[in-house]
Image (cartoon, rainbow, N blue to C red; front, side, top):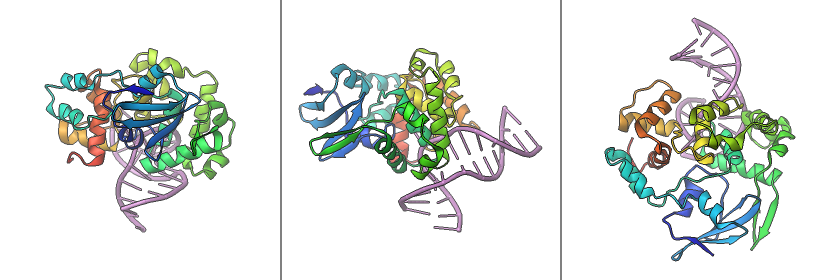
Length: 275
DNA sequence: GCCCAGGAGATGT
DNA sequence: ACATCTCATGGG
């Protein structure tokens, strides 16, 4: 059924935008297991078509279809570079992912490239997730905290997780021990950031990614190598460390700075804008 | 071989 | 508080 006619480029957002590393493409359809249910999405002239088991409201929220991105662009009328970046990718959306998946996948993202992050996430799901067969394709759910908490560093290193292996296990154990993952979205940005950065493998950058992509903190502003270069060359920001860059970018770019950040990141990473 | 990728943690000053 | 090193891995 059609779940929306809003502007969204599924391939761009689900496969190429580097905010989510879980979706697979199979002859024009995009599949993933969300909330334990397999879903296939297709881009059609009538809108976004969804098949499988899903709740329309939940799916629309996941895809961030309820947000007016033209309104966000308008907030940056006085910052032409920002406005231009948003208007450059009309199909881009900032997903609202489950915090647990966002946390683990971005721990894996540290000092890593998108292709390999996707491959590592896929390996985790195939090893620890549940399989769903539908229409010739097989989809895998994301492992539960308990499953990562109970595995061994040796096994994860054998799956090429490298030095991030102990981070995954220890963080999973912290979640099992009661870390308030689902409360982060109700906490202040500063409190949520402070809580997240107590987790092993979670520094300032990864924490901002979790807050932005998994906790609806739209002011969270991850600064990676690309955004760092872009902030310096476009905006003339002169800060020493990445945490200081985040603080300055948040001060300048406001409550929806994180949404903007996704557009800036994509523009920089794909070379759409010269740095 | 070297450098890089949506960095973080440990150590030294 | 800040700079520097090391940590796996695969691709260019």
